[in-house]
Image (cartoon, rainbow, N blue to C red; front, side, top):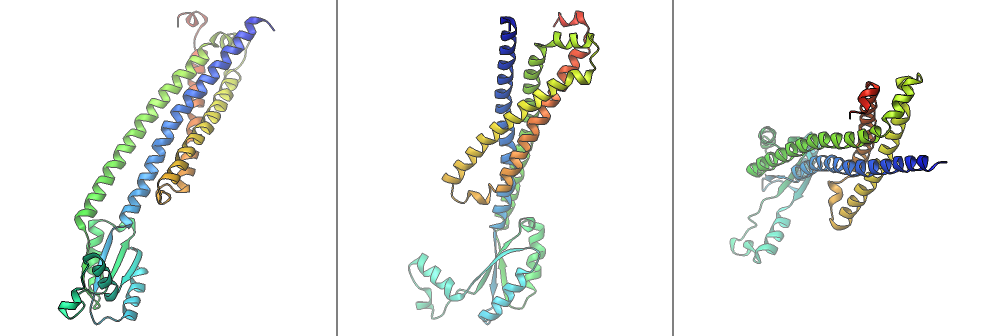
Length: 292
């Protein structure tokens, strides 16, 4: 094998390595955007489901009646979780926080039995809460109902803004990543533009000429995606070790969808860029190859 052939293979090898590294970096950025979008959705649901609606019960309601009401509410479509707080438990909690027992000077326990209802995320909004509150108040065992409506509105508004920012960022990064990978692939194909023209001269079809470039691009895309997934997986593992409770937001579904998205991005973008780049040189005449 001549030195010229060895040098040509070495250059192609370096181009493939460069394309793989640049594609990996871009896929990491795209993977981060997908990861944050999905995590933001889970965080939104988690925060909404932790907003509590407090249902206050009549003093005459027994423990069994309260548990029956709790069971009835639990089967409603809007209920995510319900906790029963007895008068005695409420008094103990207040004594622990205040350091004094109000029943000693009042002569009775001033705290009512309550149900703390956590709603499903889809129902944690102003409109849904209005008809839910009306429905619960119809029960004779209920005296009053309270919830932080302003806090719920702020949570919904802020989460909506975050989602919009992440979606815009995702669109921008997709465009930028396509441009970066396209330029890198085009440079790789540019170095072999005379080989493409020679194959045209001997009668090779466009599909036959494109095939090796597409195979190489897809292979690089798969390898780059695997590296990107490994980096993202290491980052997620670090979150699990350092942030207790993060598994409620960063679920295995988030990681699986992120990994699949990165793999699809890696294959589709590199293959599409190679297709466009090869077609560009296939359309050129011999004289035009020297002018670029």
